[in-house]
Figure (cartoon, rainbow over the protein chains, first blue to last red):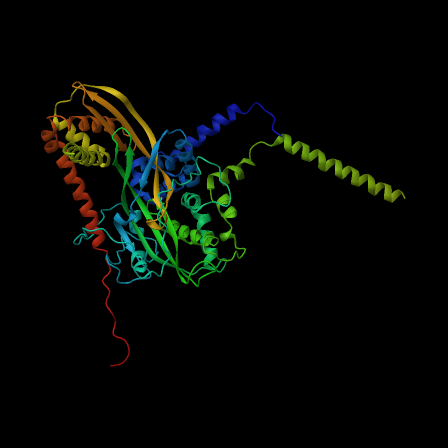
Length: 362
Length: 154
């Protein structure tokens, strides 16, 4: 039950003033600029763009500053801002096969054309704190080598040549959009992928990990992981043709899963797919694993009762803004609800007491 | 027929410069534009407006489309004094950048095109290609060279 209550305005105003002061912190320490956050906390910025579902590094950096580094709060700010923007249309699907790759690795094919390119990775670092970063200093220039001019082919293409991996059916169908229509179940793979790519990294990671530990067993190899930029093209009605309207950095992961065949499909390799804004490798791999687990129905597999196979469970709980909204609302004033609960418990106690007294008397 | 072909070539050229302008770093574009000099008068057909487009991907990279997430875009349209119309769709929320991009789009359809190409578009394209090449060169330096260790006894 909700009852309007008045009061607390001054307390709220003062709390927000204090928040602003705490956000700034010790004024003898230099203030962070939005550009510093964008450039130096880029992976946090990427996560906010991916889960905020809006590609704009400056806005994401601003949101991180405003949220004092609380990334879910920052994602909340981006989602709220997003709803104020008119939508000009939808782009042509990005062509990840033409990606300018910073990084491109495969765990399945050592000698894939284009090679194993590590890019700016944390892999193979020793995970020891680097105290040199605590002091200011110049960074040595990264080495250069002869750049690759041609596009790097997708690794699944090679398996497709042999016809031992499931083909992605070609289609130009207009995909569903969960920001426009409420989700309904069973959901198509288009809606599942949209939901996963903007879902909470921690949640998707946990779900993916559960499949590795044996819930909805599907042993996945990373067929390919690539990070880089792709051009974004939009059909512009006033021109009558498509133009590039910018470029976005993406992480793409394709998993290759062994598959013994089912009632409807021959033995072959199957695929899971992850595509996420920014350099967001953990999320993209996790997304691919969960995508694969959710495909049991279309591949004619059995439902094993695992949470990661249950699309209603996964899709209804992956959005951290919905989750935090519902979770955190219980801390807001519920005085009247609670007052009635209190009355009820008191009444039950009173009745129980009366019963006891009666029994004692008898 | 010949006319159609001419249109296709013209559209392709326009596609080229509009794409270049949308991806151009704002600071560099403004610098080159200021240096170019004459700032023509124009009328707004549509004032700069910030909005979003839904970016799509494909399942498995090649399959059916799905919605990946949105991206900020600024668009505007204007007409030069002689009636030539310029449009802009640029990434991000740069209203000034959109204005300049639309002006250049219009001017590229006038006799100013050759001078503008030399003063603004070519240097932009070169700088952007160089930045791209440099990134690819850093990436290439992280390519793994495998070598096989000798195993077992000989």
